[in-house]
Image (cartoon, rainbow, N blue to C red; front, side):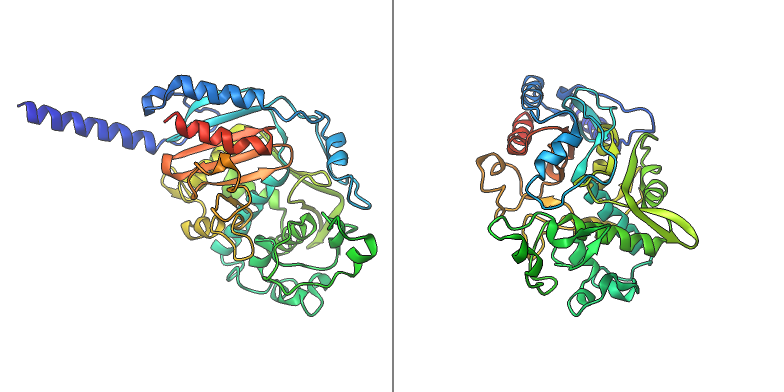
Length: 386
């Protein structure tokens, strides 16, 4: 009898665990559970949250000012898209789909800068899943026939090169030259202009102009705005709010089948990008944590998720616009990332914006306005609470 009771108790606990793991928040609501339900030390998780609150980015809350200061070393840098004054630090800790910790106003819409790139990667994956792009290994010049990919090396660039920032695309888009973005401080302006183009796929360079080339190319593939593509294929399906927006620049309008459509930016470097709240970020992270499934429905192929978070040959820390905690990476070399599993990956943006996915613990962490040098310590503190 005692044995049977133990078996029944085990089965009940197993069913409870399954139901927890399968939880996906409906639109407009999100269930909160005490950390202790999942074996998480409440005191330690609160200490971690206090650390995040105390480690708020101390930059200017007027992001227009902060952007101009942050990229002051770039020649001709200007703001071409919308900006927004940010709020205080906020964020969420998600375990098995449930909120087990939060701080600040998680419903506040703010700029998210280069976390936008992770959404752009997802939109690329949808295009491949739909067959609009046969393979990310294809040359983009086979799809985009205007002058964007003219040139001996430009015509060799693949979708994958644009995704992992190894394209070294040369040209100008929306009035910004490729060399103007994060130029080598050791060289002068004449050297920037004349720097030889690298062979595509051989050299990593984080560059928003080239990211915007990817967004422009996808616009021409979909033949409709990428915000609408994101909304219809991902955000509506995961129950995101209606408050998020995705902007481009004042001069990034394109004639698509007789209609003027804005080509969006992959970040807020020059303004624009995705403006979103932390709860919608967390839903997007939860979709990736579940390998593209949402409540049993396939949203993005599992194959694309895996490719997106696999290290690139030119940068072990970077996949398809997601950062990877790789042991050969610069961030891993710092003490705060060394105790974080190497399968952890994250979207990251200027000013301290993060979506962190922790597969081993079935967790997603969203942090807004947390200093880059502090995010690894914050994740480590969360893991130590389990």
